[in-house]
Image (cartoon, rainbow, N blue to C red; front, side, top):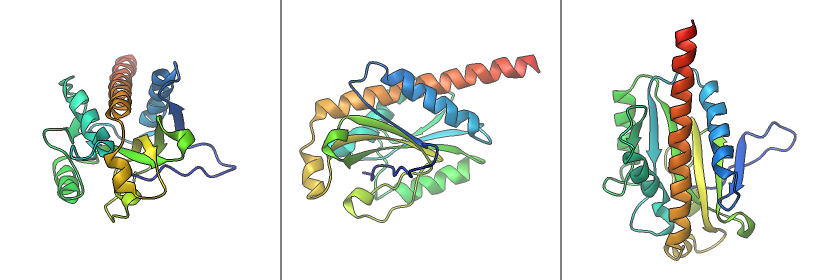
Amino acid sequence: MTHPSDFIPGQEPLSLKVSHTDPGIQSAIIHRLLFHLHQAPSLQNIVIICIGTDRSTGDCLGPLVGTNLSRYKSPLFNLYGTLDEPVHAMNLQTTLNDIYARYEQPYMIGIDACLGQTSSVGCIQVAQGPLKPGAGVNKELPPVGDIHLTGIVNVGGFMEYFVLQNTRLNLVMKLSDIIASSLYSAIKEWHYRSVLLAAQE
């Protein structure tokens, strides 16, 4: 579980935040993901790391996204973190060590739940840079991702563990569906464009 991304006034926004009820949410997320993917130095090895645990309703966003993505059986990305095999505080460092040993210059996309202001609950964020898993519940864990996506599942500020345990599964499932389908569509679109460009050279 992650803290929301900070926006620095006066700079070009490095993050997108949009409500899951916005009819254009998938288009907006795909567009922003394509922007980030095209900025990346190398996309030979896309690695998606979905962080969280199925033991907490609010914190199962990552594993749900991972499980949804696994159903595509896509060769376009490498996936870590599902309901069957979650990536959480106890195995995150081991997982990262394995990724760096297995892939050369992996481009990592981190996914996690986070808590935020009441007005932001139900929003999905896409941001440049790594997410900081565990920050919302005062855990020191390694940062994850060249870019990251987070779903704001509930209100933060106090009793975070209790709040996560009492988050509506309905909202978490809606957010996970949107994140998974948008991410898959963006990677597929990026791959299609890359093949077209390579053919024209």
